[in-house]
Amino acid sequence: MSAALTLAKPEHLDRLIALCAAFHAEEGIVQSDEQRRAALAPLLEGQPYGVAYLIGPPRAPIGYIVVCFGWSVEYGGLDAIIDELYIRPGVRGRGIASEALISLPKALSGAGLRAIHLEVDHTNEKAIKLYRRAGFSPRDNYMFMSKRLA
Image (tube, rainbow, N blue to C red; front, side, top):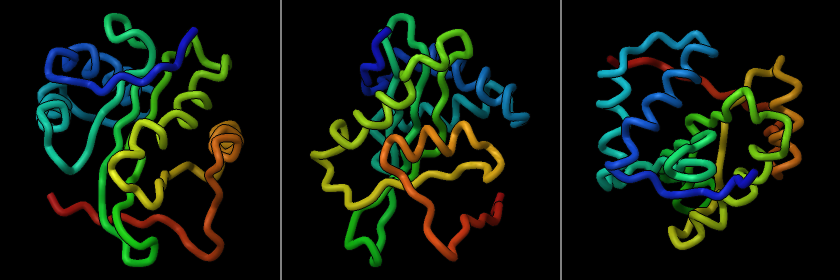
């Protein structure tokens, strides 16, 4: 099975919403399909703040990655956060997520990215192992913190 990345476009929105809903159900994230549509559609229409990639064949994707862009003085320019990464349960454990994470920097190389970050539950040993295999490492003395504004 291939972990090929396809930049998601407006015609992929319904497939992406279905994958996102499955991920949110697994993670206990409460959000309606209308809210997902409002959050994802701008990325597929060229919003410069992020992109979504389908993993696998675009007509029947097996997962997705959403990447949001930012700016870092520390890293010297454009950086990104992997906001969501999801692989369908039936195809997990086959190296697809690893392959997708290793392919992601290549897909984004033309954007001049200086760093890619992600957030992971510190108790999710399987995910931590996956991210380490893909070249991510924790930053000593740092933790990701958030404040909801709306």
